[in-house]
Amino acid sequence: MTNTPLLAVDGLDVVYPGKGFRAKSFQALADVSISVGAGETLGLVGESGSGKTTLGRAILGLAPVTRGTIDFDGTDISHARRAQRRSLSADLQVVFQDPYTSLNPAMTIGSILSEPLAVAGTGQKASRARIAELLDHVNLPRDSVDRLPREFSGGQRQRIAIARALALSPKLIVCDEPVSALDLSTQARILDLFLSIQRDTGVSYLFISHDLDVVRHISHRVAVMFRGEIVEQGEAAQITGDPEHPYTQRLLMASPVTDPDRQEERRNDRLRLLERQRNEDEQAGAVA
Ligand SMILES: Nc1ncnc2c1ncn2[C@@H]1O[C@H](COP(=O)(O)OP(=O)(O)OP(=O)(O)O)[C@@H](O)[C@H]1O
Image 1 (cartoon, rainbow, N blue to C red):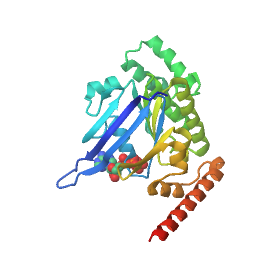
Image 2: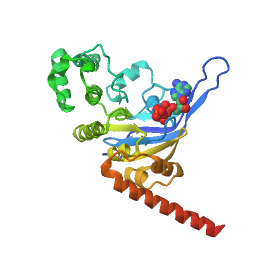
Image 3: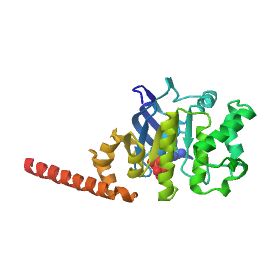
Image 4: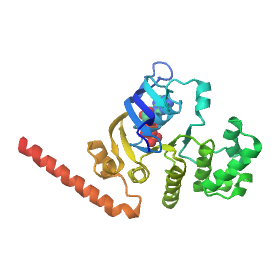
């Protein structure tokens, strides 16, 4: 990890224009600032509708930037045009939540993986070699190339989506709830895959999730989003275990403990939080 951020979002506003006659516009992000270093994972956590996906989409050029900058690898890409976006796609990739809809059902795995390589001008022989390497990397058999997405389980499809994102060795992958559609044991295996890929390649992740346990497992740092604003950010263990902001505290108290190995740890976090809230209430009472 280096100190120079690979991605620096500064003072970002996103306002969705109203649709139809008299429909109101909607401000989905207000003054959002985050950064992701090379080889780092920033977890982005928050309730449904808080604006997490909108931030990911703004970085990918899919949501309108009204104000602020998005610096990626030294260039402001907040208003990048199509040609610049295309050249960025080698370095900036995405993995979506739903492995059932994110892969074209009519294309073989070989065609899905060769698409980004062909766009980048990779020759057929080099492309075949790269595809074999990618399948090894995500632990899928090499003969997967001739099969269709429907022949794979949800976890395997997410491995294919990850392989596709890795094809051109990106610097940053925006991961938008990439394990939410998977069962618990598959979630754990895919999270481990994300971690081992990062160890091997040094790729950075902006990892979007509503699940504090998932975010704690995968992230170096965590940012918490509430109603379109970042209300708190810091080291993953601190934000997910001993948060300062009342909203994050509520998230911690309300979130289900998905990982059985973490139940004890989470119980202790909650007890510590309750203790702190009681002390703060007592102090407030003493002052009043
Ligand atoms: N294209 C759009 N036009 C208008 N409003 C939108 C659009 N996309 C999202 N929104 C609104 O912006 C807000 C933030 O949505 P967003 O999908 O970014 O939240 P989220 O935290 O990712 O939620 P979820 O976890 O449910 O996907 C919501 O109120 C949503 O209705």
